[in-house]
Image 1 (cartoon, rainbow, N blue to C red):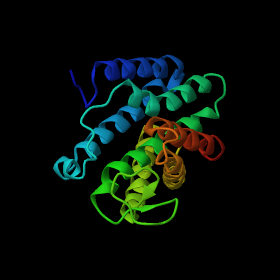
Image 2 (image 1 turned 45 degrees about the vertical axis):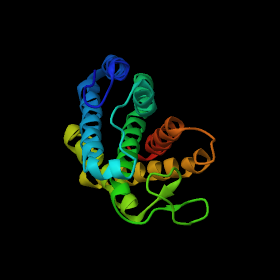
Image 3 (image 1 turned 120 degrees about the vertical axis):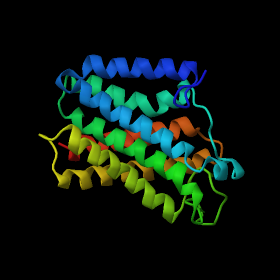
Image 4 (image 1 turned 180 degrees about the horizontal axis):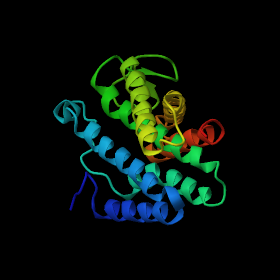
Length: 213
């Protein structure tokens, strides 16, 4: 069973995370959920984009399960839980979502062009290798974070101006860089894609906590 690239455990995990966000989101519950839905739908789109080329490169992920859902969703969900007790976690939530969106754009679209190079030794590597980036990947990562910035601008019009869109984009981009750096030890067998995703979200949340208000 697949829905939006999720198998049944992945779908159940998505519902649980959505329930946490709705329960603890307070007055912003619907907006928080809407932003996560924006991430989910945009993530599905970029994952399916040019899938034939991705299959040729052996980097196409045709189905996601609960591990992927938790790796991307647990930090934003916990930020919303914390927001119920500390309003500054509002910015942490936005930063976490911007970071995982930046990573999603970078990993799914960045493999389609450019010459990736390892952050470990700056040598060229095959597309899809953890700990590697390309100029295209960096560009689309920023675009992904900016996409969340614009979505936040429309979902929270009383909180954000267009200047905040740029701030959110930079925060998300920084989170995606943290993901790439965490991918260096992953490429050596230390950690996994899930751990790098969590690090990405944590980095975005930590920066967002201080700079997005």
